[in-house]
Every structure is written in structure tokens, then in C-alpha cells.
Image 1: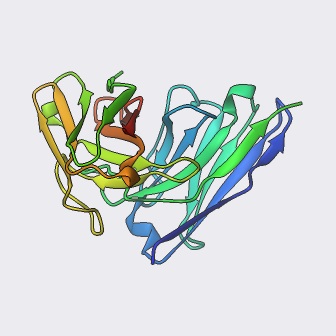
Image 2: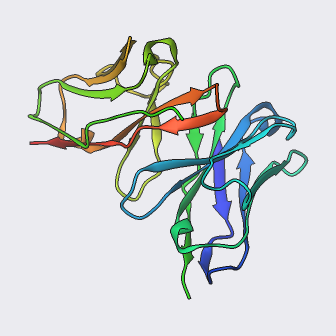
Length: 120
Length: 108
């Protein structure tokens, strides 16, 4: 069955960097677009970024552009999110999710999420 | 940037029908997807492409989309349907995923 497992979260000081990982299994990873979506405590879902199949196309939310970098390693079935210069408002649960197509961008499977807390 | 507007809350009695709306400029020409999220859990896709139900989603869940409003309809509402519901589209003009603000469904 499809599994997406995030890791790499935790408590981080403001200004530091962090790399989140999402290990995928149960499907052909290279055949799917992969997203990061975050949710601040008590708030709604906020899309962060997408990387399409071979990693050549990447798009970011305006709120994270320039500080966040999404990438993927299809040989390892793993998605990454590099977050630099962390700020307090980056505190959130970060989810990875997959999309089957660029023509129909639906997020049909999600990981369980990983909490990132930015605090001194 | 494209904006999706949802009511913050909807209340419905058990056994009745709940409608959750998602407003957007000419949203009728876009594919709208809906997610359900229980507290502390990851979102789950309940309707894709306006009206398609993924495997395992009860027939009580349906969707429609026309002009400036998409609607998620839950028939014969049960206590277990209490959750937050989010609509989502892909904005091709900006290459961004856009979520609505979410609607908390309360079963009275």
C-alpha cells in the first residue's frame, strides 16, 4: 500500500536550517508529482511547494520562495525540503503528499506529518 | 493570486444533508478537490475532480462545481462526519496549489 513517511522535524532555533525527508513506498515514485503542505497550529492547510516527476520543474508558494528548496531523489524514493533561515512562523506540521498528474493536481495520498517548532 | 472562500463553520443535525461551499472566481472551469481532516490526523481526499469519489469514500459524499461555487454535499450525516473540510484547486496561471480556508463541520 502507499506509504509516505516524513522525518527530520523537531525544535530548531530561529535562523537555523533544517532538512525534512519523505520516504515513499508502495508506488512508482518517479511517476508522481510530490508536494509539501504545512499547517500551523490551529490553522488551515498551506501549500508550500511541488516538484514534478524528474525534478526539473519546481514551484513554490510566495511565502517560502527563496528560503525553501524542494528536491527529490528518484533512486531513493525520497522527497526533501530544505528550509533555511527558519522563522517562528515556519512552526507547523509539514506533510508530504503525491499528485498523479500535472493535468489534475489532486493530492491523493498524504504522509502522517512531521512537526517543526521554531523557538529559541 | 487565486482565492478560495469557504464558510468557517457548518452545523447539521444527524441524518440531514450538509452542504459546504467553496467560492472562487469562475471556479466552474477548474477541477476542485475536497479533503477531510480529523483533529491530529493527515488530510484525506474525499472528492477529486469536482465529483469523483476515491475508493473507500462512502456514496454519501458528493461534489458539484458550477460558475463561481463548488459544493461538497454530505447526505445522511453521521456523528463521525465531524471534521474540517478543505477545497483545493490548481491555479495554472501561477503554478500554485490553492486551498480554501477550511470549514469545520459540526454534527448537532
